[in-house]
Length: 455
Ligand code: PFF
Image (cartoon, rainbow, N blue to C red; front, side):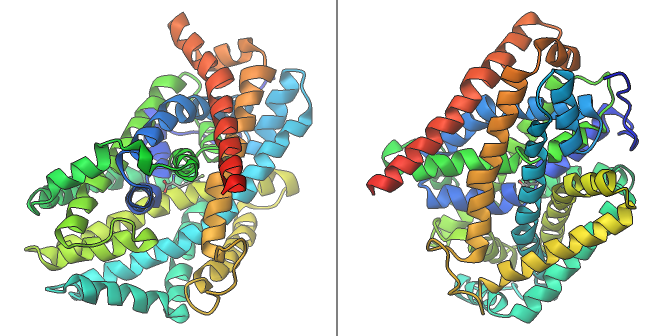
């Protein structure tokens, strides 16, 4: 490939890439989903498997994904195709990019519904709806919101509009400015919440819950969820990191940059867990309460702490922003692909994609009310979207990325892009990518199918 320059501009520095990639990685997955799936899967053993998946499967594939994007300098579909062709392989590898764009849509559909709940909670917090309220009242508020398709549609639509407003302008303009301030603020607020959790008297119990590894509580299903979540939280396997990589300056180190992103992402998830579980235990709530966990625990804390009204508002504002910077990256692969493929303007591509994402989201939000009995394989549409993307499409995308970069492209290409200064660094990465990541994905898949078949 002679001309590797991105036609769509690039991040102004390595730090901006780190912020944008962290903005994509840190989102509802960390603050909303991680704590509730830990709760559903019994705690410590799940956390341990999740951390192993991040380090041994997630990070190597993350590096491979960004490498493909920076080499190809286009949308994921075309980047993968061109790098495969450069290595003398079939252009059909570009299917990875197409699968990824589809996964992005499907995630966007349920993601924007949950982000809508967060927007609604920002207003609840600001209005003082949580002040002095007990956990029963707060659970009631959440149930009321879910039962109201009209309210859900309004919040969902508001979120989709916010996302489209940035994607239309191009991610590396508006987004850069916003995340410079917003990501550090999110960290500060989480730490404040952690300090509140320390005062509940249940902090020790929650640490045991999060870090004591009792493997008898973990099923194969839980292991698949941990693996799927490692992909989900790192925005992996669907081209989001690839498209961000396509804007990455050529001289930046992919390895150190992405290890930083993975560490930041993991720290946010663990801190969110350490902030939420003490409140769960102190109020005799159920840690396995599922998707509503964050929406019924944290408001209890905000309602009963000094300054909770302001603090609660700021917290949900920050979660909304974290969701927003992630959702932008969910649509970017599909938008860049449409622009390149059909030679249409970015605005037109955004409108089409936004409309499809919004419509699918209506189906997802109906799962909690009018469509609660539309079940496929025992799951409502919302759960189905989550299961199919996190547990099937993202790991499958990651698997094929590992095979392509680990086995099919020449090491000279990956060495050239990674320019790892130590020989050992390259060897460890290449080993993990060739042998550990794809094998782990396959074993977990097969074990899960087997246990379902048995059970
Ligand atoms: N990583 C995001 C989160 O944890 O909330 C979700 C996500 C964003 C997944 C972008 C995939 C993606 F491409």
